[in-house]
Length: 109
Image 1 (tube, rainbow, N blue to C red):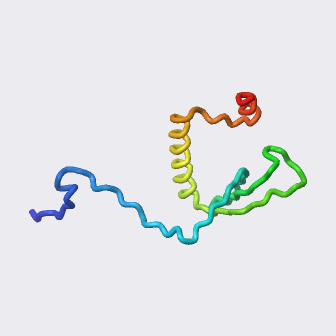
Image 2 (cartoon, rainbow, N blue to C red):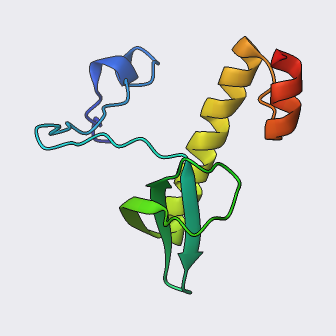
Image 3 (cartoon, rainbow, N blue to C red):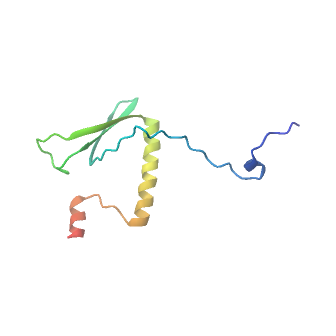
């Protein structure tokens, strides 16, 4: 039986640490969004992000869409899982996030 090559961590019965892909952030831009829309097709999802001063109200003023992401459904599902995890951790630390704007305002007032 031939000896199998083992990493030092595997030889000690430990899992090797997970490596993350290196990132090039030299051309990244940051945009704030308080509005989004999800549309798509059987092949992909489109996520559009924008900014509106009229939270929750439909007016004649157009919403300025600043970013559009096109994702495969597989990538969207992984993103959903990561967002769910991040929000769950946030709520465990800071408390439940109230989705209803009116209820949030009553609590503050």
